[in-house]
Amino acid sequence: MDKTDARPGDYVKLSLVNKDHKGILLESPESERGIILLKLDSGYNLGFVRKDVFSIKVLKKFSETENKIEKIKSDSKKPNVAMIITGGTIAARLNPRKGGVDWLTNPEELFKFYPEIFEKVNVSVVSIPFMKASEDMDFRDWQKIARTAVKLLNDQNIKGLIITHGTDFLHYTSAALSFFIRDLNKPVVLTYSQRSIDRASSDANLNLQCSALAAVSDIAEVMLVGHASENDDFCNAMSGTKVRKLHTSRRDAFKVINGKSFAKIYPDKIVNVSDYSSRKKGKAKLDVKFEEKVAVVKIYPGQNPEILDFYARKKYKGIVLEMSGLGHAPGKRSKNSWIKKLKELRKKGIVVVGVSQCINGRTDPFVYSNGRELMDTGIIYLEDMLAETAFVKLGWVLGHEEWAKNYDKVKEKMLENIAGEISERLEA
Image (tube, helix red, strand yellow):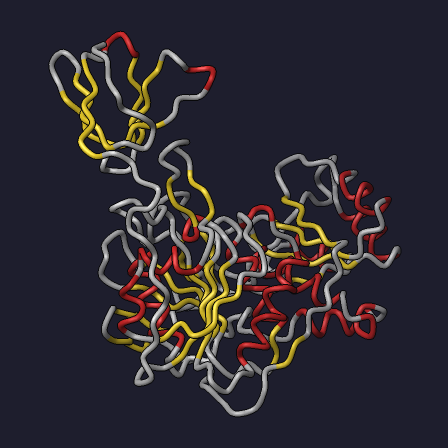
C-alpha cells in the first residue's frame, strides 16, 4: 500500500486494484492490525486486508470542533415539552476513532442532529437520570424515570413529556410507567431509534417529530411512538401495556398486540384510530412500589417442574408462566406433570399467573381438561395480557403489602384492567 497520512476519523477514498470505496477510516482493534476498517456512507463497516489496498487518499480530515453545538433556542409561540434522556441507540453516535457508538454527552449534541423537533415544540426542560442500554436497567431505573416524569407532568409550564430509550426492553419500561404513574394528566411519550443518529437510514428523526406532536396532543396515555413501516411516512402511537418489540433491526420493530394504535402520527398531523384517555386537570400521582422477587418461566415440551423449586428456595413471591396455546403446561398424562408442583407453590404462598406464548389471542383454561386441571392449582389466568406486562404488573401488585398478603386481593388486582393491559374484546 502507498504511504498515507490518513488517521482514524478521516473521510477517505480507499482504492483496491479494481474498485474504490469511500467512508470513514476506523481504528482497527489490536488483534486485527492486518485489517483496515472503513465505515461506508450506508453506515455499514467493511474490513480490507491491508496488502490488498492500493492506496488511501484523505478527502476530509477529522475535526473535533467541527459543527460546533449551539445552545437550544426557545420560541414563546410554541408549546413547551420536557424530555427525559436515558440512553439507547437514539442517544448514541458513531465514535469515528473506534468504529462503535458512544453516548452523547449533552442534550445539545442530540438536538444538533434533530433540529426539526423545534419546528413543533420547545424542549424547555431536559433531564438525564442515567445513561444506560435498556438491557442494563431494572425496576429501580423505572422508578427513577417515574419520579422524574411525575415532577415534570405536574409542572404547569409543561404540555407533555418525551422519554428517549433503548429498544430491547423498552416495552418493560412503558408497562412500568403505565402502572407507576396514577391519575395521568398529560401525554407520556416513549420513543427510540433502531439505527444510530449519524446513519442516513436512522429512524430517530421521524420518531422524534411524531413524538413532539404526540406530547402536545390530547392523548393522556403512556404510549410508545415509532415507525409504522420501514418507510419514513408516519408513526404509530401505541399503548405502553400492549406493545412488543417484534423485530431485531427493522425500523417498525414495535407492534400493538391484541389491540389498535391510539393514532397514526404524520410529521404534520395526527389521525385518531382508537379510544384513549384525554388530558385532564389535577396532578399525576406516583406509585412505584415493586416486589423484585418475581420471575418469568417459559413452558416447553417435557419440561421438568422442578425448576420451580429454585424459585421457592430463593423465596420468590410471584411467577409468570408463559404457557402454550390457551394456557397449558404438562398435565396428568405427562411424566413431568406440573400440577402437583404448582399446588405446592400455592400452599407456600407463591402467586402463579398464566399467560400465553402465542403473540395474539387470550388464555382460556376451560376448553380442554388439561386447562381445567391446571386451573384447580390456583393459577391466575391473565386473559390476553402480554408476558412482559404481566411480569411488571405482578411485581407492582405484590409490592403493595396490603394486597400481597391476601391471595384473593392479588387475583382481583391482576384481573383488574388498570392501564389498558387487558382487552375486553379481541378483533379477528
